[in-house]
Image 1 (cartoon, rainbow, N blue to C red):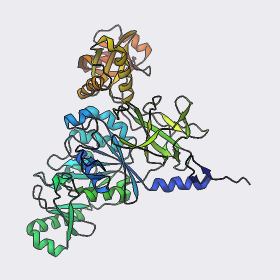
Image 2 (image 1 turned 45 degrees about the vertical axis):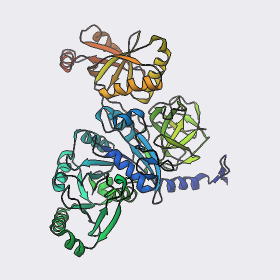
Image 3 (image 1 turned 180 degrees about the horizontal axis):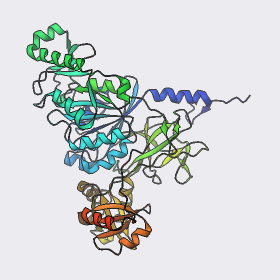
Image 4 (image 1 turned 45 degrees about the horizontal axis):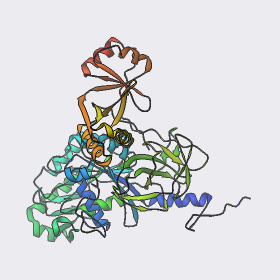
Length: 548
């Protein structure tokens, strides 16, 4: 009989081997909660993110990293342009502990121009929180991001935000959620008082009232909560309490009751109400992440086979980010751990090349802050510093058996521009900056035959703003853009490209991976060409549900 001995890492910690080690990975995964927050711009996503950090103890006050209380900015909005514009431009990973769970929060941009970055991040999540403005309900970007969650079978928790301000009837919003996105909301908390006159909530799990006293310093500290029994609440809030009780009875009658089974199947959504700005109801949502959101499950590989949590380490890169720390100008690859135990310093295999990949510089992420870690488990997100050989979608694995995960699809570009260095003496920095920002997915860099002039492709105009800002400020290479121009793009092949190149009104460009793209000046011309030449390859660039 062969006896497998435990192994020790560089720090001298001893870990079990074989089946016992597999059990440890499964137990550790059960403690993880990895989720993303999605919303339309200005619904309060970043504010809710900050308040989660406040309630978990990761911040001393909202907007200030613990032990750095003088810094008054959103932890998740670390990029200079984000702070200038007051919007989220880049997705961010924040890891913290709450009630015995290790929480990996993936904050995403809300603006549609950065949908592709958000999509990549959703491939690394096990659940999502959908934030809705009580005055606006389902908005276009919310709908689009929910569709991505639905395609990826991600369970969704709903938070109706800004209930301290005038807004629409909560019952009306429930109908809108179900009719517009097909998700059945099952309220867990319900407002007492109409929007703008928000007294607190009924917790439908016990029928009690939870009220909130405003915290000082504009919501920078946790709100003080108090509870009342039904009789005391009726006496204090009168008609507002009675109306809320009657609405809860109506919810009971229609069966709007939360169950974990239908939630994890993506049929229903536990719904909470409150105000992230004033911290009302924030704790309820954070508790729901721990109590309701699923822990990591086995992730299917490219063959469709589920890779067990206890198998040898595997993970995939879902985001690349450079210059998070301006003092070091470094490069971080964000890796979602899918299986096994990650130990800093272990040598992995890089899936696309089969080459060994060392992991000496590994960190857990907290916005732009980072802390060296020695180990990680399924569900965790690790940052591999100066991992310049990695690209989005790459797999890393331990052991002899190769592991590949489904590719992360890309969005079809809608805008095309050409770029030139504003100062030709900075051509080397210009080239290096474009290479880095393409690796991050800020824009796609295309080329026309042997012409060295880069053609840039993006989903939205703000991507070009980010590109210009970062090229000038991070790489010292200001750029001149011609465009952008709206275009309709299709994937083609070599045979069809030869015919297309002879036509007017269409350009044939090549991506870095060799894919040929037919770029039409108008959708009408595309329709005409496709109708006249049905044998030519003009495939849509479809965003599917693939990924980790």
